[in-house]
Image (tube, rainbow over all chains, first blue to last red; front, side, top):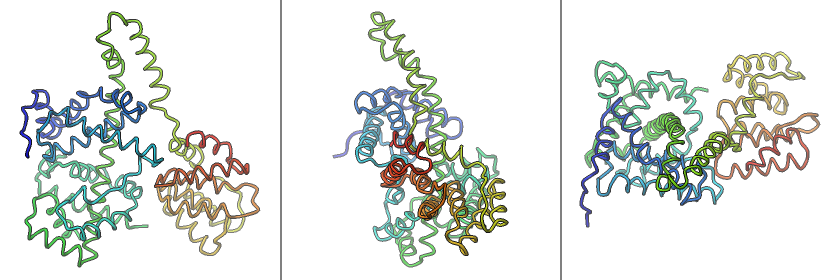
Length: 197
Length: 246
């Protein structure tokens, strides 16, 4: 049974509207969202016995993950923003505890294809996943830094869900088409840097 | 290649039809080069997102730090009158504790970073054979030309695979370039060399493992540090420090 949508608080609606905007509006929405439920950090310390830094990390990751879902229209409004965010935060805290108890490093994050494209068949997913598993993440990050400010900004904004039109506005390009062509060239340049010795 | 990226980009940035999905799957399964392009596209996007998120988290950290005193006062709002002095003391204590512990945690990873920063900025070595090449390589390293330095040291190792300095510096270069798998292999080989009055190979391997931070790496680094301390090998003092955080 599908749960009904609820009427969101004015403050929540304001945050969501800002997050769905671009540039400075979105930045201000991110800051407002982060500040709104900052006391979760304390809950992370008290309820989940995390230290302050871990609780802060769990909260920051929850906010980033929530922003990604909201901007990708993944927030359906079936609970308040606070309840929904708390669920994400709860899972992050539990993950952290699990990593601590199994002595696994928290920084090492495996990237799974399923997070990125769910509509593809398992056999195709598995082929791509195997190739992604071979990626040298540190080298890729190093090469991204070598790529030059404009290219890096374009790729980061695109990865953050901004459209080419938004990117054109933010970085001062004439049209979305120019951004797309430049962005794909940057990707190719990154590939060459990554492959070069 | 750019054409492929255009096609892949369109696929991920739009809502593909069932026919388009089928065609995309078919190309992944039948064209290895295309599958590699897809994997690279997704990896690059993920890496870019990682850098972006780190920047955002830094911004969040600043907001959090600025909010600390106000936040501490807010916690005690219901009992503000009764516990005024206790709250004030808690705020001060909170600030002191957070300064001492929160943003300066002595984790093994941070200690490893500190070691790298303090010890691998520039190098001096006592030269054995290959003096000219080693000297050139060290100059390249000290000038920050790491790929060129690595190429040179690897060429020395091709003709002399147990060259102590070439192994040591090739490992350090790989470590600084984030090529941890290779660094670990070089340091392992370095540690196996006998008869040198100074051989930090085992300790360096532990540092590289901490930097790689893959599954089981911390445990292995801990084991190596214990061995360095137990056998009083080179850098055992620092290994002792690391052990306290592992």
